[in-house]
Every structure is written in structure tokens, then in C-alpha cells.
Length: 261
Image (cartoon, rainbow, N blue to C red; front, side, top):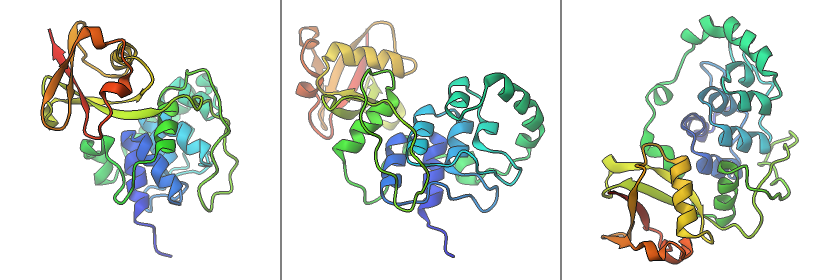
């Protein structure tokens, strides 16, 4: 039986934490429980091992099995290190600590595919080839990345061919319209890319700035804000901070530029 070529891409996105791409692969019918032929790892193994909680939530919601063992007999929770992920996978943290000691030796000799050992970090915010922007998936990615938002909706349907029961998931209400916005330092270039946020377009600019402080590393304590519109960076006046994020950052190429003071 021929392996779906997209399985390797799914595993790579799980390993680097691209939750939006994970959702697109799940929706397109990729087998989320497919195992790597060399080490037996699934996407959930990689997400749990690398500590990507939103991806773990996305995969389990779509029916990923937490019982599958890799070639060393390890389930995803055996490879998890973060207490929150252990809890998601149904493992007591103290029990997990003892497991880590058992598998510490094995982890050193675990086969890691080259595309995961040295991942292309530019793919952290990229989308699968041929995919189109989907407002519902943007909304879902926002909810997964911001699980503390107090609202809930029914869990999405499973991907085609999945038989597992989806886990309950807290998501945002329909009033939340998520938009992915790239965040740069000083200027828009690959070298200055700091990360990406899933902002609610109905939130104020001030609220979005707080989201940046919470989710993006190395943000200065004091900074100004600029809007890159695809060709130039336009300063955002502090008087505009009460405006909705979607009013200013509405174009497909719009990006946030952090301007150090």
C-alpha cells in the first residue's frame, strides 16, 4: 500500500507546532494516525514530545489515538514532558516522571528523520500546497492557541476515515473572527520575523498588543507599532489603539511591525 506523501508533511507540521496547517491536513483526509516507517512515530508522538499543546489538542480533537506505540513501545504520553500535555493525554505527572527515567536512554538513540532533525522554520507559519484560506479553520486555530477564552462550541467532525471519538474542546464563540498576523521587529524581512499571532479582529489594537506581549518572545517593554501594508510601514498612532484590529489590519499582506523606542 502506497503511503500518502502528505503524512511526512503532517508529521513535520506537528513537530514544529504549525496548528493551522495541522487542521488543513486533517480536513483534507490525511491519516493522522499514520506511523513513520522508520521509527513508528505518529503526528501525536511528535507534538507531545516537542511540547506543542495546541497541536496535541487539535490532533486529539480530530481522533488521533494516544495508544499507538512507536517502534520502542512508547506511546505519545511516554514522550511528553510538559505537565499540561501529560494531563491532556490522561497521565498523572508523577507517573510520567518515572516513565521519563525508563525511556531516557532510549530517547538518545531514537531515529529522527532529517526533515525533523533540522526543520525548515519558515514552515512554522506556512500552509499546505493548494490550500486556501478558511475562516472557520482560522477561527479554530485561534481557539486552540488561546484555550482560556471562556466559550464553547461543538467539536468539529472527524477527518475522513477516522473512527476515534473526538475529545471535548473549549473554543471561542462565533463572535470571534480570527486573523493570522505576522509580527516583525523594526522592518519586514525574513531575518526580523518574530512570530505570528491569531488576533481577534474585533479586539482593540491595545488588546492585540497585549496578545503580542504574551505570545511573542523578545518583545521590548516599550515599543511603537507600525502597519506594513505590503509595500511600506505606516506608523500607528497611540490615539488609534482604541480602534478595532480589523479596521487597521484588514489586508492579506498586512503585518505588524514592532518599533523599538
